[in-house]
Image 1: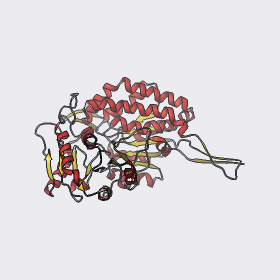
Image 2: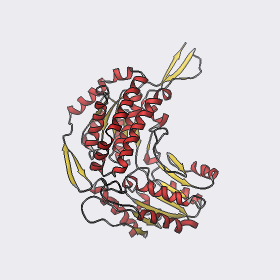
Image 3: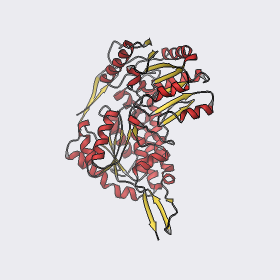
Image 4: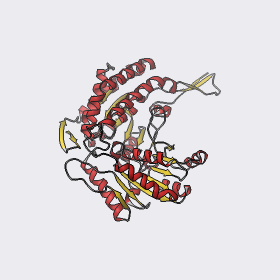
Length: 453
């Protein structure tokens, strides 16, 4: 059974039957059977389907946002924009897939030689709970537009969201079985990965989970894309626009109650402005409202699960015990629900828990640095390498610094975000492969060489 629990009050919303054994393989077989017809359609025809799906997402926006609020605690004011972003992704690939995948002529000893990009077949997406609609569509939109069919194994926390995504495709009039929800318990994911009809796997989640999925896929000689955890640094130098840097760092840290892989998690601040910048962060964090995610003025909803809330508190307490100062938050609230308050930890040394481990919640960790060289050294002193923020007034120096930061993406004087137009992904224990942009759609195609004499 898949059990949906409302993190706002800890109450069970509903229980859903999960697929087992042959039910899993039968569902995948149906999606595989749809491959031939779907891949034979033109980009225009596939694009028309994705545009219809985007329109249906917008039509059901309020309903989908409410499902996210109920199942994983996303503030309703963030839910609507997430649905819009998912629709944008569908429309973006509907518009650009053909150009991204056009054949590339390469001169050789042939009369004509080129590389073309046919689909691989049926894909399996294994997704987390923290952005149920957006993460689904950054997998589905490029995969489908490339001509693949897609199986969606969503997180057990959000079974209604997963079912609703499949229903959106049905309501939009999409061809039968080009995309199916696969409601299975986590231990049964291996059956899906090893199903002979699955050609490749896309996984978003923890580094621990990613390592297991990667091993299973590799043992079957199936390609995989992994977007895993992050402990993203945000470097703030003295010549930066400090007010704007403080605004963006705060926003990045508290979106989705801090439950984002690419949130600004370690704030590395030049010593000469350290105390002033800490005061700016504290002022901003103090103004945030934590409460009912259904209320439009709520900034921070609950953590998605109680075990995640408890682990976050363990990280905070271990960091305080090691000598960090807690200027705000740091205590478990009384009452129902899995809330955690905006927390500001300062004077955090690199060896402390909240600096070494990924913190998945509204906990801001601040560390002083002497200069840009020390900032980059500490930014890179992590097993992760997903995203990084860099705030500097000198744009030339900032670009040079960005080349030295070990991350899949660096935002200079702006927020680290995912965008359908640009590739996203990590290095080290943050994963491999890329999603989105022209790079993302080429992850699940066959770069086929054709030689003609």
